[in-house]
Amino acid sequence: MSRVGSVVRREAPGLTVALGVALVGFFVHQAVDVVSPHVIAVGFGILGGTFGRIDAVLRPGLRTAARRVLRTGIVLLGFRLSLSELGELGTGAVVSVLVVVVATFFGTQWLARRLGLPRGLGLLLATGYSICGASAIAAVEPFADASEEEVAYSIALVTLCGTLAIAVLPALGQFMGMADASYGAWVGASVHDVGQVVAAASLHGDESLKVATLVKLTRVAMLAPLLAGVAVASRRRGAANGERAASSAKRPPLLPLFIVLFLVAVAVRSLDVLGARALADLKNGETILLGMGLVGLGSNVDLRRLRAVGGRPLALGLGSWLLVAAVSWVAVGAASW
Picture 1: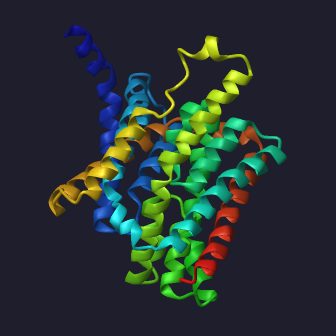
Picture 2: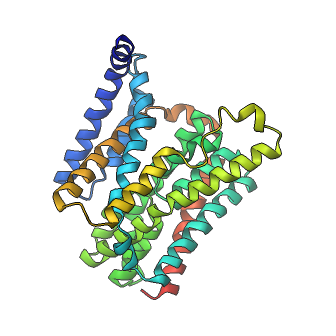
Picture 3: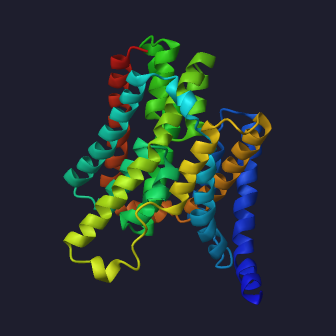
C-alpha cells in the first residue's frame, strides 16, 4: 500500500498540471468549437518545455500522461468509430482513403531516406501525417527506436502543419470552387488532428463537416492495422539483425494492449448498445485524456534545442504535408464526391 502511495505522490503534481491544461483546452473548445483542444494542450506543453522551467517534481507525472494516459485516450477514441457509419462512405471512398494512408506512410519514409534522416524520425512522421497526428506518433513510438528529440520534433511539425491547414485549405477550396462534399472529403483525408479537421471543414458548412468527419474517422480506423504491420516489420528487422534473443524481453508485443482495447471499443460502438449520453461522456473523457497526454508530450519539446537539428526535418515535415494534400486531392477527384 505504501508503494502505491509513493507512486501517487510522485506522479500527482505532473498529472494535476496536465489535467488542468487539458481542461482549459476542453472548455475553450466548448465555447469556440473551431479551436482544437489538442492544439491548445500540445501548445501549452511546448511553451512550458521551451520557455518555462519544468520542475523535476512534475516530470514523473508528465511522463505518465504522455504514455499511459495518452494511450487510454486512444482506446476511448475507438468509441467514435462505428462500422455502419464508416460504411456510409461507400467502397470507392474507403479505397481512396486507404490509398492516401498508404501513399503518405511510405512516401514520407522514402522522403526521409532521400534526406538522409534517421529511420525512426521518418516512421514517426509517416504515421502522424498519414493517420491522426500527435496521437498516432505516440502510438507508434514504441516501434520507432527514436530519441526524445525526434519524438518532440515530430509532434511539433505535425502540429505546425495541421494548424497551417486550418488557414490554407479553406482558401484553396474556395479558390478551386470545390463542392462542399468534395472539400470535406479533402480535409478529412489530409488534415491530421480531429479538431483541426472540424475547424477547417466547418468553414464550408454542415455538409463539408459531416463528410470530413466520416473520412477522418476512417483514417483513424487504419491505426490498428498500420501498427500491426509496423510491429511485424520491427520483429522481422530485429531477427534479421540477430537481435531476437537479446531484445525479446524489451521488444513491445506484436499488437499493443491499447490497440486491442481500441478495436474492442470499435466493436462495442458498432453494436449500438451505448446511448447518446454515454457516447458523449466517452467523447469528453477521450478529449481530456488525449489533452493530458499531449501536454506531457509537448513538455519534451524545447524549440531552442530543436534548431540544432537543422532544416532537413522541417523539409520532411513540409514535404509530407504537401504529399498528403496532393494525394488526397487526386483521390477525392477520382472517387467523384
